[in-house]
Length: 200
Image (cartoon, rainbow, N blue to C red; front, side, top):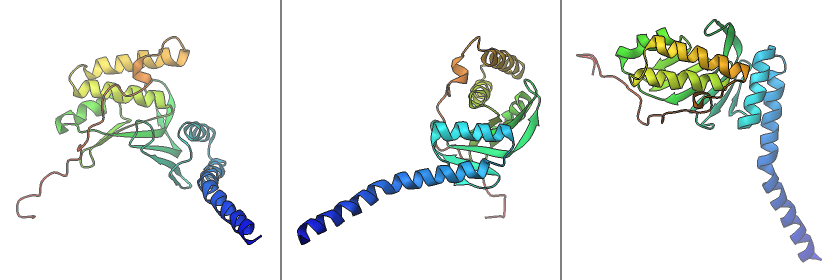
């Protein structure tokens, strides 16, 4: 009797341990879903899409959901706040996705001219794109990489962005530029700079 009882207790404990991660994941997803319930429609829908694709976020606040190392991204953030953006057509930016990437400071102006929602951080060694669709973030970063590599001018990149985005949105064409990164994120991309004279 004692042996049977001990076995039952052990099996129950093992079952609880096995189920703990699932319960935690479900709890995190419910928490994120509850958090975004009061968000505006577009951020709420994009947040749901990211949860369906990448699972519950690693961090949840009243103003953003954050995933780390999800898919090809170093980080993904869905913001409650929407930032109006008119290129290539009127929409709002609320989905920002990051990769490790180093850009020569001389090219910062070109990237800003190409797309104000492509953001480069020299010190951290990151480049991000912020839009309302993941496909458009892929497109923005792939064309930014082409500019950095010298394969496209700013004007050409803007033209290709607009044409590809229009084709994607009308369902007439699916370019590889909207389905994934066409370059490898850079390891060791951070640039901490050097101390100024006398500031060691």
